[in-house]
Image (cartoon, rainbow, N blue to C red; front, top):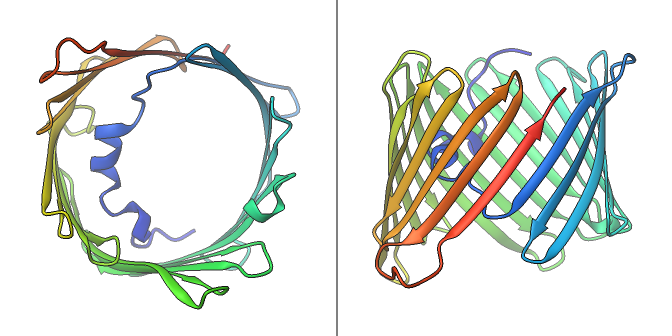
Length: 276
């Protein structure tokens, strides 16, 4: 598939991942294995409060097709088919969920050297249709997306944004929530491999006249250990330690507390992903 410009959903994603990815306040254990036939199997157990949830997933790749199936303790079955190069520079994704048939969707992504396009259609009688497009070159991308509800005949969303990607930094400005929210972010990479980075994000809500400012970053202590932090103007301080206990097996410890209300109980989470 050609290395075209990014999808609209990728604009600002680097900053979002630095500020939110891998932060968890539950206890989770997952074990992944791969059979000789190439089938990957992952079993997960999550404790939220005093309740446990379990799921088992399998993944199989054949030529340009990837099949992913997951079953959870509530008897929900989620199946995703991803087909690359179904047409030149095109990827098709079909997601199904049983017994909730209305949760299914079909997505088509098209990548060109200077443009990308994505369309998502829900698999129900009166579907919601999402369309997005991005154009760009030399690390600059302009994009927009819209959602249309065929039942009500109204737009569910329309957003626009611009992203700038360079070897040592990423920047983005997104106008979201039908023009009500303006979100700007900046990520600066402290090393060539982008293992250590600093990030700042500001969000402005025009209807509520509220500004939210968040700073954070990630620092690679050594090749196996990464520390992440984040702090917003509401006083919420989060920290995360991620360590590769052995190749492809990751231990993540994260926490968050309110610096303006130290009497509140901090949140803590632990996740262990094992891959024998």
